Image 1 (cartoon, rainbow, N blue to C red):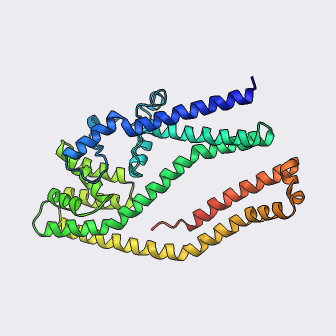
Image 2: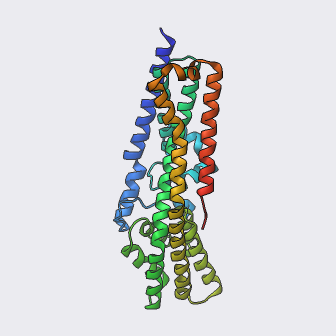
Image 3: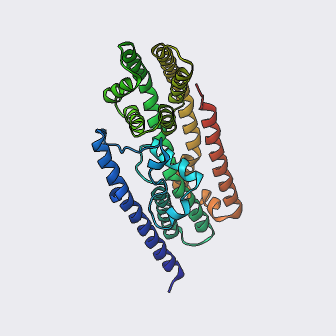
Length: 328
């Protein structure tokens, strides 16, 4: 039997099995069903699961139940950190399901590379690159989704602080003000507030619940707000006035971020154009005069030059992103 065909068949089988396990665990696991029922009982109408993070005894199984993968991930610090990242990205996958998805995508892209280019030297190099890219793409999506959620939460934060401060001035307590904000505002800040209130209702202290909310959200702005609230609880003072001042600071941060994004957009697109020019020119030359560019793929020195160009492009993209990443 052809070893290439056998390897391809084994890869396809492993990818399909891993993908089906991840899909089953995400869509039909008892954990997800139980959390959805608890959310309905607790009045969670946002469509997002209620996950308790303030009390260790009520914390969901972070590793998940995918065979073999979950046993390898159980009890690791990376598992806890990855679970928090998935939660802050609004993804309902457990860590084992997410790792299974990454393996599935890597195997599929590797199979496509083997089928398209065979098992020659170039084929093996492309296979390795495809597997690495396939394994990294889901994590890149999590980073993108997490950043999008954090930006939306930061934009909601000033309104939430104004609402809570006005409720305190009207005579409401802190818990009543948080509950009012959770009912009046939209996801994601409303969901985070409901989870914090749920933690407090089941026995967690206010400090633990608020710190867990800041950890789950991943927002530095929310962490500043929580720190101000906890300092006020320890030292005393007018919480409504403190929240008004913090809310003003948050609005200014949002305004400055918008101005920075406006000023850096042109440079960002300039970087995209400069980075894409070699690829576009290479495609045009291959269409106009294929013999001129063929040595890059057939000669050893050409392969080295092509690999060096890819590496330089990669580091150029990282450098541009670092220059345009301005913290406020």
